[in-house]
Length: 303
Image (cartoon, rainbow, N blue to C red; front, side):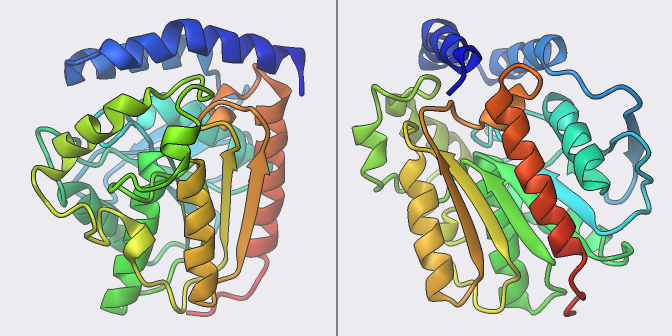
């Protein structure tokens, strides 16, 4: 592992984890993340960002150098942030990098956030965004990180249940797949995780769920059915509290006959690809994922 990774882990442990442990106001969380993302996360030179009305919500297209909006398939990406904060603006630099590496356009919808828009608003918005892209050349590949990764999986499961057009595949960084928080890594890695405070997980989830059963498959896709889904690529760090969300999700998907690529990395922070250009491990992961996306997009669309 790189020296830069060690420095990043220390910085996150000393600054970001205490901040997330004490922050209470969703608006301050959102504003803070927006400012930090604008300062730290830079897109590659030649990237373009375009607003689009592909659905009733705000949508941002992130296009890497030389990538056209009508190239195919499209990446439909749901940002993370515990269903409470985050936005297309906080994640568009990472998606511009991935777009350039894979040669595919990325669409980032501004789905409704809690507490103003509690469950199931995010899932409804995700399904609407997918429906708006149903005629995109080459189809759609779902993606997301953390809560957005869980949302991508929930949208996939709902689409399969409703009999809609199947996405070509799905990828997720450190997805949140179980809002019952029954995974052992939530406790085992509570000290090791350099970013996420484990004791805040239930509180954040309740802002989103507002009393809904946390085992609802639309909230916790770990309990959903995925028979007939396209290939899935998942990654997580062995030191983060959501490690078991990925491990158990992999087991669940494979039990339904889904082709899964699971990539577990050592002592990296939650959703480390966000730190592209800052730590080599982030760039390595984006390159590996881009290769998987290119191989997936070269397969025939089975719809």
